[in-house]
Image (cartoon, rainbow, N blue to C red; front, top):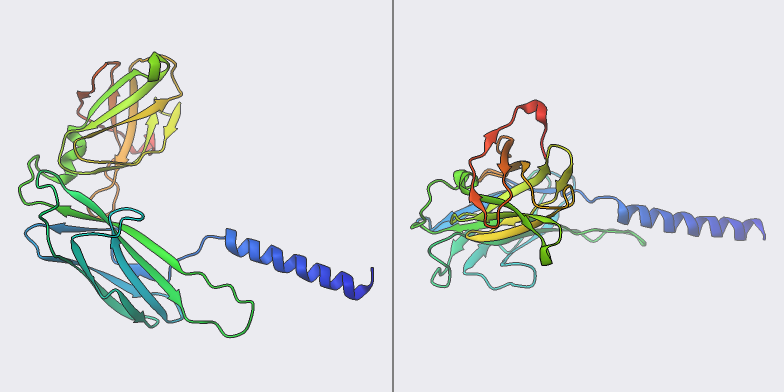
Length: 262
C-alpha cells in the first residue's frame, strides 16, 4: 500500500470516527426556555413562556403544540410559530385557549410544547448541523377542580404491594385519586434494594411497577420525590407500603437529607 493510499484510508477512518462521535455526543440547546412546564388555568385566557438565544449564532425557532407524539390537534393557539432569534435576544411564546369544550372539567389535561432551534445554513461542504428540539409539558387546569392544591396531590396517593400477573412475583401499585398529574423522579425500594424509573401518573389512574427486590408480596418502604409546578423537586419522602390486594391511602413521611434521593 502506498503512502498516499494509506493517508486517504486514515483520513476516511478519522472522518467516520468524528461523525460517529458527533452523533453520539449530546447536543445542547442554545435557545433556552424560561421554565420546564407551562400552567394554563381556565380562568386565564392565555399563558406565556420566554425563550432566549444563549448561543453565539442566530437561529430560526419553530414552535408547536401537541397532545402526544403524532397527535397535533390541540384546543390552543401558539404564537409565534416561527421566529428568528439573534444571539442574546429574547422572545415570548404565547399560548391562547381557543376552545375547552372537548376537555374534561373534573381533571387537568396535559399537552406538550415543542421548540426546535434551526441553525442557519453553514458555509462550506461536509458540515454536520443539528436541529435541537426542547419539549416541555403544558398543563390545562380547569377552574372547578376539587382536591386542593396541585402541589399536595402526592399526599393523597394510594399504595399497595400485590401479586403480579398470574399470581407470580410482586408489583407496586400506585393510585392517583386526585384531579392532578403527579410526576415522580423515581422510586427507591427498601433504601437501595431496587431503583425504579417512573413516569407521570395521570389523574384518577393506576400504575403498576414490577418489584425485583422481592419474590412475593410483602411490606416495603418506597422513597421518592416529585416535580412541582415550578419544575423543582419536592422534599425526599417515604411511605411504608403494606402487602394488600387493593391500594390504601398512605401519608408520606419526610426523610433526612442523608438518606439520599431516588
